[in-house]
Length: 58
Image (tube, rainbow, N blue to C red):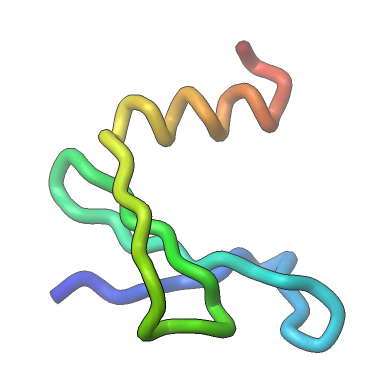
Protein backbone atom coordinates (compact mmCIF):
# COMPACT_ATOMS: atom_id res chain seq x y z
CA UNK A 1 0.00 0.00 0.00
CA UNK A 2 1.35 3.49 -0.88
CA UNK A 3 2.56 5.65 2.00
CA UNK A 4 1.16 9.04 3.05
CA UNK A 5 3.56 12.00 3.09
CA UNK A 6 3.54 15.67 4.07
CA UNK A 7 5.38 18.59 2.54
CA UNK A 8 8.77 19.40 4.00
CA UNK A 9 7.36 22.93 4.53
CA UNK A 10 4.76 21.66 6.99
CA UNK A 11 5.18 22.43 10.68
CA UNK A 12 2.68 20.52 12.84
CA UNK A 13 2.90 23.13 15.61
CA UNK A 14 1.84 26.10 13.50
CA UNK A 15 0.01 24.97 10.39
CA UNK A 16 -2.80 22.67 9.41
CA UNK A 17 -1.26 20.28 6.91
CA UNK A 18 -2.52 17.79 4.43
CA UNK A 19 -1.01 14.43 3.61
CA UNK A 20 -0.84 13.08 0.08
CA UNK A 21 -0.65 9.54 -1.25
CA UNK A 22 -0.12 8.78 -4.92
CA UNK A 23 -1.55 5.73 -6.61
CA UNK A 24 -1.60 4.85 -10.31
CA UNK A 25 -3.68 7.58 -11.96
CA UNK A 26 -4.93 9.08 -8.68
CA UNK A 27 -3.86 11.29 -5.80
CA UNK A 28 -5.46 10.94 -2.36
CA UNK A 29 -5.45 13.83 0.14
CA UNK A 30 -6.35 13.85 3.84
CA UNK A 31 -6.03 16.09 6.92
CA UNK A 32 -2.82 15.18 8.76
CA UNK A 33 -4.48 15.82 12.13
CA UNK A 34 -7.35 13.41 11.32
CA UNK A 35 -5.77 10.40 9.58
CA UNK A 36 -8.90 8.29 10.09
CA UNK A 37 -11.15 11.01 8.65
CA UNK A 38 -12.34 11.49 5.09
CA UNK A 39 -10.04 11.18 2.09
CA UNK A 40 -10.45 13.18 -1.11
CA UNK A 41 -9.28 11.57 -4.35
CA UNK A 42 -8.39 13.36 -7.56
CA UNK A 43 -7.36 12.20 -11.02
CA UNK A 44 -3.59 12.60 -11.36
CA UNK A 45 -3.94 15.11 -14.22
CA UNK A 46 -6.27 17.31 -12.16
CA UNK A 47 -3.85 17.29 -9.23
CA UNK A 48 -0.94 18.21 -11.51
CA UNK A 49 -2.99 21.12 -12.91
CA UNK A 50 -3.83 22.29 -9.39
CA UNK A 51 -0.17 22.27 -8.37
CA UNK A 52 0.73 24.11 -11.57
CA UNK A 53 -1.77 26.84 -10.71
CA UNK A 54 -0.29 27.18 -7.21
CA UNK A 55 3.15 27.58 -8.73
CA UNK A 56 1.88 30.16 -11.21
CA UNK A 57 2.50 27.91 -14.20
CA UNK A 58 -1.06 27.93 -15.53
